[in-house]
Length: 216
Ligand code: BG6
Ligand code: MG
Image (cartoon, rainbow, N blue to C red; front, top):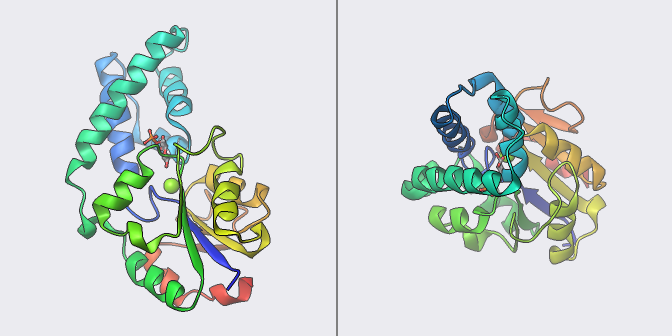
């Protein structure tokens, strides 16, 4: 079947969004300022370096040199890798494993489309790498969401036309990336954040009841 689902990772397959936020918050504190929870939403789907800019802006520290920014991004990543070192299949978000099995048994192809350079690593830790035909993550792309590059790379790897792909996303930038790529999009989370998605579900468990066949 020439139809596919492309899954974002953080906040869709696994709740690593909270670890990204905690690592950035810890970095901000080490620099002497706070990065409040309400700003955490701005980091979702955004690349590591762009996230750093958002965090530094909150601390009025955007004047740092490029090399200093690299060091800070590396420190955040070390904190993050530490947080995710204990991930296991118990951390897969509700319904995702069952939904992957179901759509694959129905003949849909599946891919990961994540901005994270740790995307492939996390799928291996969760023990579900074999449920994805293609992995497009931060290591395979140069342009971050809302640019559609990561989803178009996934679709190309799957040999499926963008119009026959459904992206599952929890971030504003991710919904925009899917639509910019000419794909359908299921948003997971709050309506006010996910405007533009074709279908919005409050949580991943609802994917199992969703009328996804009407997209094709
Ligand atoms: C996205 C997250 O999936 O990956 C962002 O939503 C994160 O919060 C981005 O910044 C990049 O992740 P990493 O692991 O490459 O720093
Ligand atoms: Mg996400």
